[in-house]
Length: 298
Image 1 (tube, helix red, strand yellow):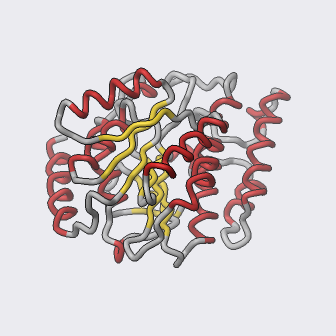
Image 2 (spheres, rainbow, N blue to C red):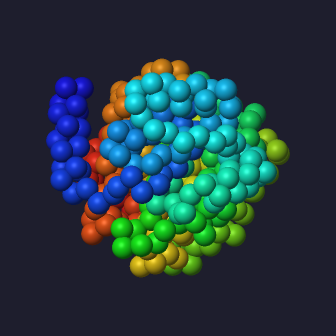
């Protein structure tokens, strides 16, 4: 852990030397009343950005904001449940009335109903709705508000290596997702619907879906694929879309178990989302367990 902290201190120093942002730079972090999301908000606010904290539970969201304000940080807040279309629309409307534009969106909100060694798909529809359709609908709703300037607007989707193509054992589906030039939003949604149909029919275990945390893995597989489509379609248009797997992190989702703290995971996430415009790629999948300047294609 000591060596990792040294790496993070060094990366922070490098980050500040290449500072391109200001107080006018606006960032939204979903699911940020605790864990990695909370740490992301705290770090970006410390670095001088204007940050919007969001939470599904209004009471917990307000408590998180107050704890940051006690540290002298200026934080904006609005309730947001990414699994609820009306909540997304209400949030987007509030944001449009209070801000002139959006520079950074970190889609962090996600759910899993399994303990680390469990693999139930009882809540598959909720997991897919929250982890895939939630970020997708939020991005669609906020898209007109992104400031596609010379500093490049940024979307960072917090994902998981469980959703990498190598985890998908269905060759036909893998080939569809590998066809980067032709891959479409419709094909991704068809894959998700096929999974939910297999769950409904009780055949999901024999259809080549990922073996670990299957519903969560499929939701992240779909999010990774959709990120790839957005990155392809908007290359050179002032907006970057990347994914980030923070690794095995100590959060509520892992029952507090993990190799990394939420603060360590957030530090890397912040470095990635604040890369200088000339160094900022698009369509990449970052593995947080590696040095944060390393990445692979989604």
